[in-house]
Length: 313
Image 1 (tube, rainbow, N blue to C red):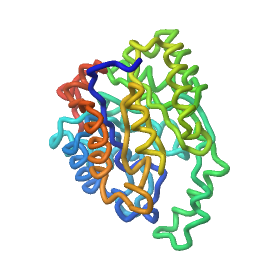
Image 2: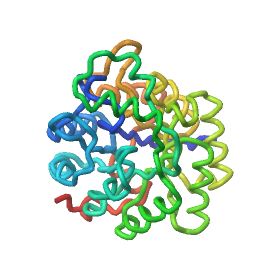
Image 3: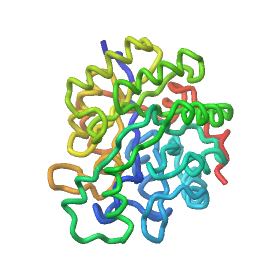
Image 4: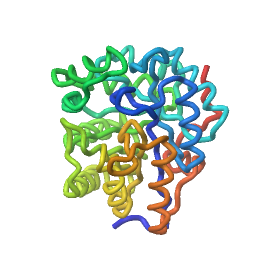
């Protein structure tokens, strides 16, 4: 049964590393664009802001701490939302590149992918003829031959080095096996409750966006961890975003939106901002009589160390 009178956590993933500038003119690229888009999303109701960085010159994914510093140091002064920094980076980055800034900043929250996988959107390249930058087509087509590496050793290294500084994790699970990987770390007391599971649906290489898969992930997590030991959040990629998130909320889950996950607001209608998606899911949830969690609520629910204990420099 879903918890009653609960508050739903809305996360927003601002830019990601998969979509490219050609795919949407509204995708934030420069540090200032990412900051403005994140502030708008927070003002619209997102309590967690999930961040990647990009090169301001051409929008390619970047793990450069200098790019992150331009974002986080400004954003932290403009919003009370939780700043959640990726440790996934991009699938062609080394683990050292992915962790270069998180290990410096030791934020309240970071994402953590719970297993290696074939992660790809290469079929999208077949529909694009004119690319804005020369790096985009090779990157997207190259995903067909790539593997997004997240080994047990990688996960243990990330948790060990970031967890000791009080960082907690958005645990990204793209398949049922990733829940069992997570259980391995929980059983060994490496990852501790409260657990924040981000169940991802609709990525090629992971679980499809079928409602049955949402039930499967929920019931498996219940069996492995117990309903009171974790918080579930739902991410639906592309056109499945709003419908799957609504179903997840009804089942007792939290939700994630953002241009990292979906470039559209509706069929054939591009989202002009992250805030548009936040406002849409918030409207749906409030029509269903759900209450939206504030950043203070989330810090209490997930036992975060607090913004005052993070210094983005």
